[in-house]
Length: 380
Image 1 (cartoon, helix red, strand yellow):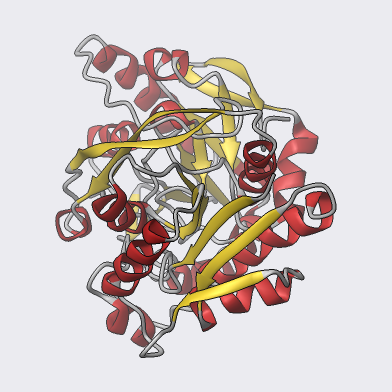
Image 2: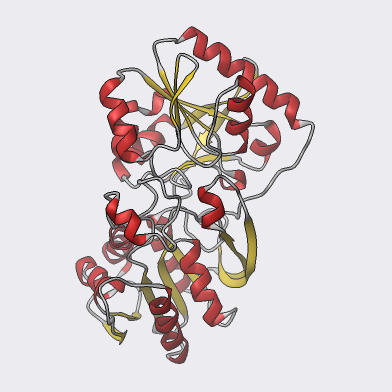
């Protein structure tokens, strides 16, 4: 039986991440001026290329897509030939209007699934058009990805497409979440439920939406984490420390007395902040200046990601130079209870495999108290 798949790529998704804009909604020109490069097409090619190499001979799929950079180019580069262009781009720079217009046509074509490459904003635009009429599956490429429609990484999205085409996965309700990027850029985390869509339900391969934990008793644990980090920094005064994003790290930094960016990357040397809200370019300059660097990260809610969600400034080149061994992961036990594994999606498969080879990471859960947590990529 032929499976009709609609395929949409949001070419600007994720561009704002490495230049520290925390998203691309409404700031494409600014991102380009800061040196941002498109990444969505690479993610799309990874996913479709993996699918083509592994499953194309088994699966009977008819593809419906957009011209040029919104899908056609990626299918061609991945080896897919049996596709139909149903939406033609009018301009080189795309917008949400293109995504919505293409989705409307795919709805008329009665596709069985819409596979898209982008972030929460792209998921929201598609959902606005289709509601819960058609299942959707996301290839992760955005800066913010809190919705439950995304594969853990590009390979996972490809495997889920294969399983869907063979009728082996359940279709169920998934959350479409979105974050107000304007407020996000000034350090205000305002995430909300946008709606309930139809999605492919597979807990091994699909990321769980972010859970917001509000447990006052956790403050005592955060105080212990602060003591641990203070002692760590005192013992390694010749190291530059990069403080990641999130509430746990923000609490620790402020408790120490550091001016911290809640949703950015900050640099600290000998208890002094030497850089706030740094982008990839800023971080590279620091790596050229300091030879010893450690990064402090915390898992993102129930998803378990420490890299690849909300901190794209920490690019593969940066992590390679720092090395996985110099990453310090901290978490409260309450958060870790809903994060049974640590996940990474760096954008570089070889680097991801370096984490897999480690098998486990030590996660600090209190003063001189750590827990061994399995590193998982793509359900492995």
